Length: 188
Image 1: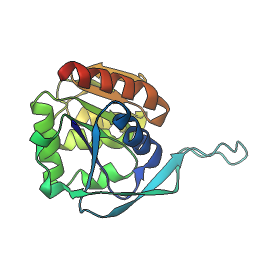
Image 2: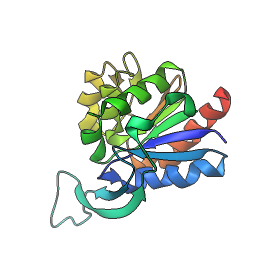
Image 3: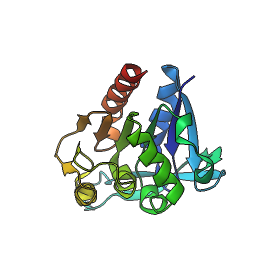
């Protein structure tokens, strides 16, 4: 069964991550969850509170479910994976500094294997130096991160550029997974 890497850390967005975590096996892919260490991680829920009497300009963060990483980034080998799914949340802000994570993501990209990315996950792609010249989308507040990585940010829900599928956030889960699975099957 082909393996898909899902890198996580504390404050990984629950909806981004769990949709792919459960959806990919339905099409015959084994999900491998990796983190800075092989341990249990805390996910979070991000949303702008829907109470108009107390407006927020940014997302509120609340605790989510927990998810076990079965392998540490240092133990990853890119040859083991058919692709990668990179979710958002606040985790990418921190785990993008991990050299082993950046190495394996860059190697997956350089091998021409499919990568899907939502929301703040673009920070990992920028740190891994694998989006130069690509057309991408993300949440608008991460547009600068995409551009700093050499990509061209476009204000669209989902963007496919070669083997890369990017989306704004969990509202696009269905479409980003549909495109990612299509590209994975074409690449097989």
